[in-house]
Length: 188
Length: 146
Image (cartoon, rainbow over all chains, first blue to last red; front, top):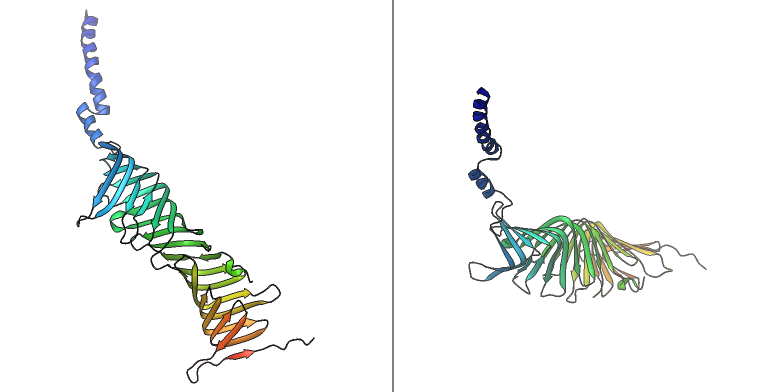
């Protein structure tokens, strides 16, 4: 009789304690949804074959960005860009083109970290196309400025210069190479 | 060597600043410029490009800047020193100013300004136009008589 009574109490107690233990360990459903909201990897929207154009306060085209896939992660305030291609109009000549395998752009578009086969292609009005290649690049579009600490190669016609580290002022069409500069100029 | 001017120009330096708009690249820190047998060194070297994008002028400054080249296979290397050197690539002329000195086959030339013609291997030395300024000085080694 007493055994029956014990069983009658123990079983419900067991089943009630299960969820309590679970919630204690992993949080209540409400809380779980809340931690998802702050999950830095959470995606709230994405764009396929995105073409973005940005205009300055005078209504002039400031830059264009194309990317086959753009993914927004609100937890990090960034947009992840696949194979981004940027076009940055310059005071003279054609826009400077910047492309890479990947990019991470701040929501306010103040900065883009580019990685993987990064190329900066410039067609200055004075002559041949100048091509700058590196593995990673930090680009500040509003300031028309880019920099890297990685090895960099600058080619122009058949001439080529290699160095480690670079700073570039794209609107001035000026590139500073920071160390170990080796160049070869061949007549065009 | 006669074919030097058709060789690629090779540069090595600690740093460089390349300006696409002006066509001028400035190299600083242990700068070495080689073109065939020609060697030009300096602390700071400016390379100017012409409209076709070819190097048309190289200005080297140093303490001193140094230049050397072998005019032909059977001639000794000509060496030049000065605080500034201005190499006009197409004209194949190099103008050395400020403590200018050229050594050629044991002969020694100094002056306020020295112009070395790389194609003809001719040295023109100029004194200062100021009175009391540096005069041209040449030390010609006696050549062994045949």
